[in-house]
Length: 77
Image (cartoon, rainbow, N blue to C red; front, side, top):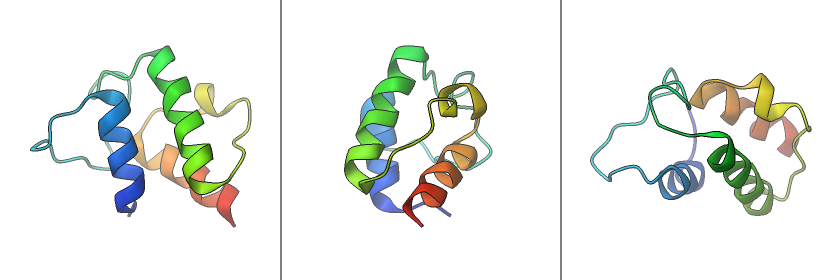
C-alpha cells in the first residue's frame, strides 16, 4: 500500500515504536497519536521527500494512514 519512505517518515514524526505494525486503516490522531503539530510536520516532511505540494486542506481532510498516502500519491502523479 505505502512505501518504505512514507513509513519511515510516519514512524519518525509520530515517534512510533519499530515493532508497531502500521496499517492503512489506522487513525492518525486517535490510534497513532499524531496531533495537529505532528501532522503539519508530517506533511512538510512528506512534501520534501516526494517533491510534492499537498493542498492546504489535507490536514483537515485526512484521518487515516491510507488517506494520507493517497494524497501523497495523487500529488506525485
